[in-house]
Image (cartoon, rainbow, N blue to C red; front, side, top):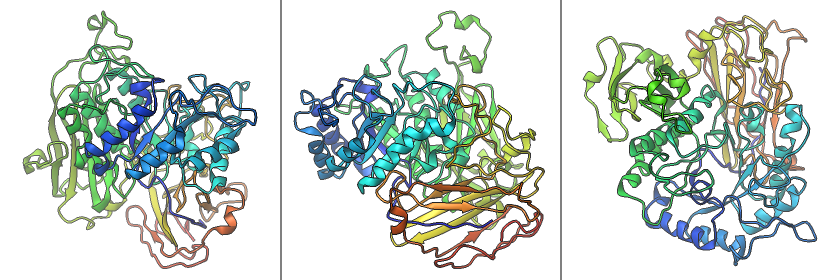
Length: 605
């Protein structure tokens, strides 16, 4: 494999963004006073100090018509001082301002969309001092079927427009999971929505989480799966409805959402009235040790590693060879909309009908999270902020906790001597997916991948003048079929039939066995000078020209590649069981001459 990485300016989204979005709580009922009040509250409540920095103004800030020159017009009846005033106010408080548009002729609320006006709108955002763009998917009326490239072209157009401004703007694609954006989104944006909008109820939360499973491998610093906003404390009637009672989340359910969103590295965007949040809600959204999971610098998302009926376990690696484990007891949950006859239907968690609403003991074996069963591990409850007794892990290496109905237990596991075992650093939550993947056809519509028996992880760290890039690649240790690199730039995905695809359709997962590249660059994917570049070639010593595959990923703005700094300074390569590695400094040249030969032949050279 030959890897060339070019890095430029400091990046955005090295950890998932934290902040506030207006839509779920206020919908179109937004104005300058509400935004200023929200900013003041974020500071006064100490939310800024625990990481919430973005205040994102969603739909309805603009008029439906553009001016005679095609410029978007601010609704001056709602925002008399304009958008720059809000941005300046935010920056004065140490916050950042986000804004909204849609990759269509109109926004979802019928205001002026940005399709065909990307350059003008991006320039407006940059000149106003905007720091974040949520880019929706409404009012795109092109005929179907379409190729992935054609469907994603609108989002690439805005990426290029943002890059051309020279301002660093976090770019969030609100694409609803259509055309599997996790396969190509890292070339385009800093995050991508994996599903349709979340609603303010327990059943919707479950659907969104379930429809985002098996996507952890596609997340990395600067490129995140977005499960939509947090409904914690939202008792308003915003864009997605919601009121306390039949809909809305209990505190236990709110804790569950916060823990799961943090573990899977989804953006943490609040949407509640912050003028007088309850102490209980504040405790949930300021849980420092849960937030630390979200913001962990390793940047690897958790995923489902075990499930049985309404009981689901997420796990993922953290820095320092630690793990996060989330035990989720869904308990009783009703269909949406609520079905008064659901209680007469047998328990079926996939159909969202009643299941027993009781606390349960949930367990996970240590080898399911990458530790040997006899590994000595310390367990800390991250919500209670309490070290748990060693007896929660049985002598045979099984961790068991009591989990309340409609709730979670989120714990951090730390080995006694971190880094002394091979799997401590190498384990990823998608490793075990391969064991169940027996589909040998990469092009079947189920979207599943190739049946590779083991995976080697290659992590390349590249430093430039103002940033650090990380490239993670999974490469087959035992190859049963010719590997196909997931080409993020082309968007060519297994199972794509040239029509809208979302996780709500079916499996929607490229497959854990696929080789794929993940890059965070020094620059934001929607920032001034582009995100960087990586190229992979020649996987396997016996690859023929026909079998050879490559992937390129770049999002540079016009001419930006000429300005990029090329200075790779360190490379670390690590493989699976019994694989040796050597790492050395590299400067200004293609990474090469590093080989791992055991089990796989010469697959890295």
